[in-house]
Amino acid sequence: MAGTQKGPRAPAGAGAAAFDLGAWLAQLAGAPPIVQAGACVLRSRAESVPAALLATPALRELVGLMTDVMRDAPGVGLAAPQIGVPLRVFVAEDQEERVAGLPEGAAKRKGRVALPLTVLVNPKLEPEGEAQVTFFEGCLSVRGYGALVPRWQAVRVSGVDAEGRPVALRLEGWPARIMQHELDHLNGTLYVDRMLTRSFATDAELPRLGSMPVDDAKRELGIEVEPE
Ligand code: CO
Image (cartoon, rainbow, N blue to C red; front, side, top):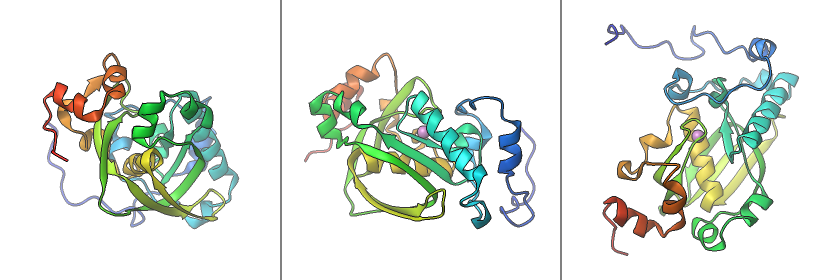
């Protein structure tokens, strides 16, 4: 076990060195790998993007890189800490062709609809209403696994894009889930912190579990099903 840490950590901006995006980009050789669970950057609160970084080539380059890494993975969302950058930035996209290729019943149940490329810098998120929905989700930083995670059914997300232009969205269903998952990354939270632990499953079982009604999957996994 590690030694005891003395005193509180210095808050970001109060003596703590701010992340140097320019230096990070300069040392980059090729596409950055997706950081995996266990890495400190995935468990720390990311820093706010300073106003001086908005609409700069560096921030545009970061967003471009993140978009490429997300599409190559492929995934429907990626937060900056997932490529080792501790800044409050995420990208999300669920392409029309991908959604159209899903089994209709499952896509409908999950409220999975296409989401155009969305860039959020310094985002805020608020649930709209109290309704929650539970489905299997996974994470590019927890490769090979998935689990049932309860999320708000509808949310309001706001922030700015890489150019500093305001973004304000009301989303429900799968796009709302993506936003909550990515925003969690900026606060050092992974879906495993919110999952129904008994539902944790490997890629070998996920396609089967994910294609059945959630209550059936819950029963099979020994998770209590709430009466409607
Ligand atoms: Co993730």
